[in-house]
Length: 95
Image (tube, rainbow, N blue to C red; front, side, top):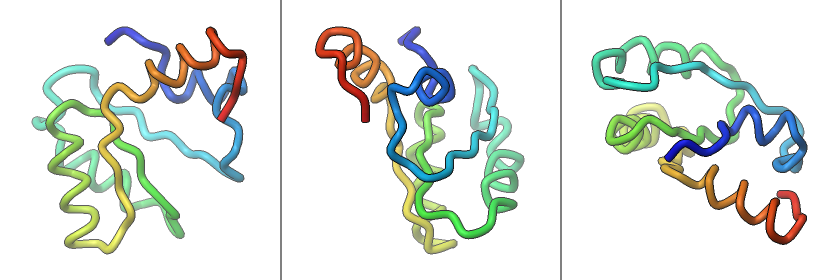
């Protein structure tokens, strides 16, 4: 949806409530072709509280697997970044 990335929203202070945020870069297209690499990259992180995924339909499948197979709290956040960006711009708030 061409909104700012979550990384950009954290860098700009729109999202500032988490104590620590790490990012894993994933391809902008054809994410499912890189499914195994993305999953491996996520699982390399230790002590995750939650995983927020933005990878089209691949995020839905990943979120399900991360929960069912690895016991991780995982969300497919779709275009949430666009909503947060707009709320910050219109109402001057942060999260």
